[in-house]
Image (cartoon, rainbow, N blue to C red):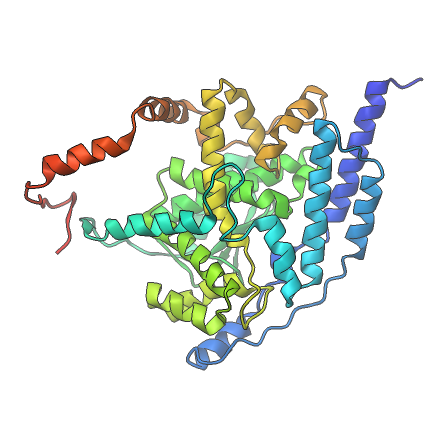
Amino acid sequence: MKTTACERETARIASIAQILYTACKPLRILRTIAWGPEVKERFLASGGRELPQVTYTPFDPTASIEAIREARRQIVPVTTIDLWLERQAQSIELGARMLAAVGTPGFFEYGRQVYGEPTAPLRYVPITPLDLAQTVLDTITQLAHIDVHTAPPAYHSAEQVAEDIGHAVREHFGEQAPAIELVDRLSANALATSRAIRIRSGARFTDRDFTQLLHHEAYIHVATSLNGRDQTELPILAAGHPGTTRTQEGLAVFAEVISGSIELDRLRRLADRVQAIQMAIEGADFLQVHAYFMERTDDPDQSFENARRVFRGGVITGGAPFTKDLVYLLGLLQVNNFIRASFAAGRADCLSLLFCGKLDIFDIPALCELYALGLCRPPRFLPPWISDPRYLLAILTFSLFANRVSLEPIVEVVRKLLDSAPVVRMPGVVGEAG
């Protein structure tokens, strides 16, 4: 039976997507640059006075590079879909070359091309990630005199959180719910894949941490992984690579915001990481960055983990850090703006496509076309604020309404109005700190 031009085109796209997926599979970035637990043990035993000694298993990028070349022989980067495929190829290639340069300055040079760097202005707004981070920190400093009169948080063990997360994911994902694993070695308090949510033994969690973990790891990272696995014609959507990291983490932090589980300390940590990355770029070594975090936390263990995030894969003596942690604040800004602007433009129909797999916001036009061709499947698992969007739609409507008025002159009016008014202190509400 003779095939049509449309059938040949869809077969070509699916073939390229499969080749790119094959190229991406060897890229296990966080696993490749992970530090063994003995590194922290030796560092803390030295009193934090000796640079960590870290070795990495060499990564051979040959298989990925050859697969990318094969994919590019079929890509004609002029249409929306082919330009999307070319962006995937470019990101995967940079990720492969970055891993091949682990432990050297080249790791940073490739990493900055996919994750960005603190002093590089954003594409559409004349502001840098470092400026954004400083704005967050300045705002928090201005609020330092405010005391929220609440009881100290009750901390829960990793074991209790694992049990509660297990119940929640089984209810949300059914038979496809990920396993919950307690592990000793982890680059964060928790990490998720489509098959498992791993929680670091020994970590402590507040009730808000639990909600944050559920919305960030399960409802975003697990959901997009499972939805990506359903994309049998576009398997590249199941493979996260450096080019998808900003949007994936931006969605996850936005989920914390929209679920009400984020707090100032979380935003401060995200901003501090940007500052620390810039310190390392300017030549600060691990000890200096660890000292910076000690000033912020007064916790040697947590300060080590924070500094490790900056130096893993890079150069311990400074000058070449891992810049991935820029993407949290940048991704939050990008996702927030995209969701608000899509709603304002009358294109809220696109929002569900954000969850059809591992993708970047700039992939959405291509995914709309792929969906129309029948190649992209609708996402099966959506976070609660999308599957039942009443709260989100109300917030977006209010946002458009409130943004019609500039806040600056109102701030001046309120400042003059309350200038001579005494500070009010009441138990159980926000008031002036003593």
